[in-house]
Image 1 (spheres, rainbow, N blue to C red):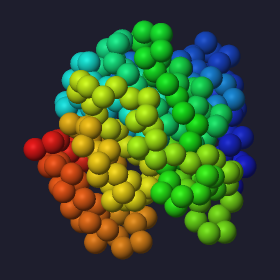
Image 2 (image 1 turned 120 degrees about the horizontal axis):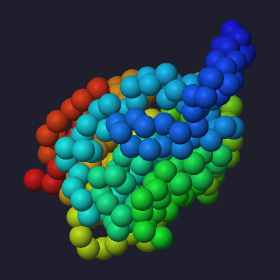
Image 3 (image 1 turned 30 degrees about the vertical axis):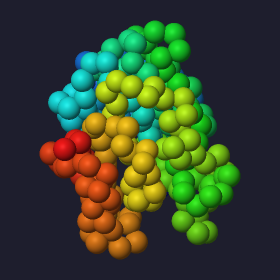
Amino acid sequence: MKFMKRQRRTAILWLLDRLGVSTEVFHPYGVEVHVPKGSDLSMRYNLTRKVPYEVGEATLIRKYVTPGTHVIELGGCVGVISALTRSVIGPEARQIVVEAEKALVPVCGANAARGALPGAALAVHAAVDYSGAPFVRFATGHNAHVGHVAQPGEDGNDVPTTTLTRLMEGFPDDGPAALICDIEGAELALCHAEQAALARFSVIVMELHPGVYPGGDRDQAALESDLRAAGFTPVETIDQVTCFVRA
């Protein structure tokens, strides 16, 4: 079934190419995004069909992140949110994008850098993890957007690990800062472990995943408690994406 779906999507993209419809350059939210052939087929197919992509994240970023804000984005995927964020923060602000799928690192990095000054954007190949291991098994899932740290016995690729604290070694220590986070459940450990690092940020836009937390809603409540302890208040939620601002 998956093979048939892939073949059908490949054929549709080929036909659109023959008809002169771009299947590599897209404009979600009015922002130019490049996803070259050979990148995630499902993402290219959905973007070609103009399937809504991360509406909650996009809306909250545009509403609460301001020009000149330095950004760390965890979970870059193909760079739609990376490009949107760059359009909001402007060319000079520092933007670090983390992506665990190695083939997508240059893709989201290029989209974050489009319109940026040289050196303002950095893409990092890593998975956010607090086990202490240097590498972690990462499963892509049915498309790159739902990639996650693999469960025991789940197939995947070994990816270098990182933490928010480590990423901030190359992050400006002054000026406004925002954390954008969509890491399919790994945010639970991050919010518990990174109280000191979170103090650097004034805005957090985070997709929550109670369905994958071991304790479900109870774990989400603990996560929100950790963020309150770090000085944040939830101000708006759209499609499981919540914006927290420093009180």
